[in-house]
Amino acid sequence: MIEHIIPNAGTLGGWRKSSYSGAESGSCIEVLDNHPSGVPVRDSKNPHGPALIFPSEAWASFLAAVKAVD
Image (cartoon, rainbow, N blue to C red):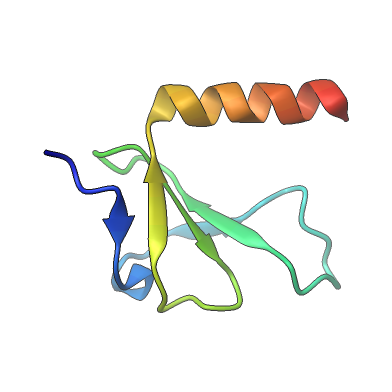
């Protein structure tokens, strides 16, 4: 079974901030590209906290829906 949570997201490098997060905003998410289990997502205010891993197909569908609203 694939684990869907990374307990300490700080153990992984290469996180990038969402392009939809403002430079001054404190509410940001970060994603990690090219993870073998999917797309990890974490809260930028808690870099050593947990990250959720979404299946790549589900993440792509989510992004398409967000872009369609924008």
